[in-house]
Length: 207
Ligand code: HEC
Image (cartoon, rainbow, N blue to C red):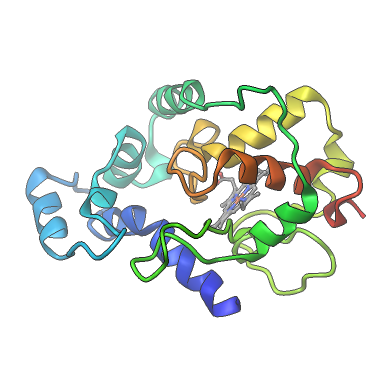
């Protein structure tokens, strides 16, 4: 499971990484550069070349070091991403934390060698501490231990948490976190389940 976690991260952020490699601090990525990047990859199974097509957030964050991006540009991209979040039609944002823990532990999905019919994992532990019991976790993201205990489970907090997992670029234009809903990595039910993992008082995250 551990090596799968790492492998999934490299694929799920592959477009970002590819763009990042082409970025030179004082140079904008040109159409010519993008052609060269595209020519360096080939499609394989579900891993299609459209993963290299950048949207506005990725372009903004590839063309300059994130720290140098104008506040107004970052805010424009965040607003656009925030408006594109699709919240569940039934209005319920919290699912089953036990399923959420499984999703957080699983790093399988979206690689050319994965069966596209098998649900993907969220691989959250690759970047975050969540429960105390799991001691193998990455530190690219902040610790989420006691997330719900510290913040409560108000509707606003549920919406923030669901939205943040759905599309982190809505809150931080150049986020390094995968866009789990926006990019169709997790289903609506899976997004509800990981939201419950973070917020449900019974979840090990809050023990
Ligand atoms: C590739 C690394 C990576 C993965 C995988 C990842 N995250 Fe994150 N996450 C981050 C980073 C980095 C941040 C810090 C803020 C930012 O850059 O968006 C973050 C921030 C967050 C926040 C906001 C924390 C706060 O203080 O408000 C939540 C909630 C979150 N992640 C949940 C998750 C969940 C749930 C998963 C799994 C479905 C997950 N993350 C997977 C990197 C990751």
